[in-house]
Amino acid sequence: MRDTTTISPPFNPVESTSKMTKVDLVCEIRRQNPCLTMAKIGEAVKLTRERVRQILNKHHLPTRVVKHLYICNYCGSTFKGAEYHRLFCNKSCYNNYHYAELECETCGKTFRRRYSQLRGHNYLHHFDTRHCLGVWIGKTYGFGKRKGE
Ligand SMILES: [Zn+2]
Ligand SMILES: [Zn+2]
Image (cartoon, rainbow, N blue to C red; front, side, top):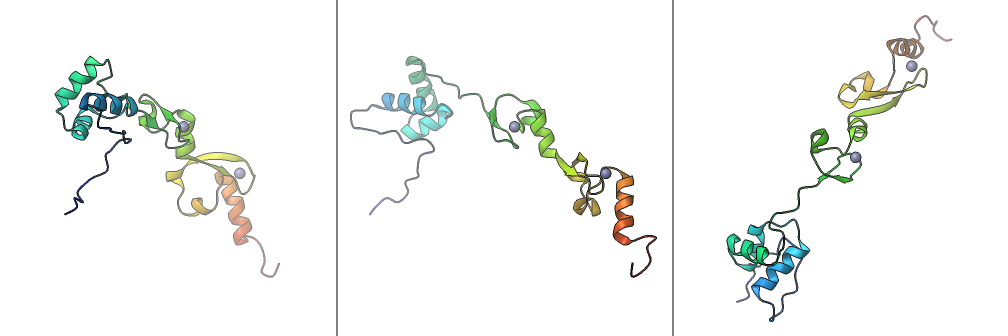
């Protein structure tokens, strides 16, 4: 019966030839997958984590995974470190993500407002000041205008 339980390995496949020893394989996997943990490598070649560590040490290969890189939620670039809650590469991406750039419907000025504040009429029509909102309401609902005008 054919074995259908094979799972695809969680790393770039390493060409395994009959001449390759498990030691070669461990080294090759590490070179191609710097983010893989020793436990995962051990799982793949059926060796203990400790044995993988010994092999890597002997061959002067890193035993620790590469420090995690974060991906900016706004521009998609990768960055290291923990600035801006590890979600954004810099302050301007943080602002662009949280604040919408809007144009006042009355005076045409651009201004920024938090997305979370855009509710109700603010969501459909944008005004930088209460004054501009008032002007718009007057125009739209025709306060002070006579019917048929
Ligand atoms: Zn960014
Ligand atoms: Zn305005």
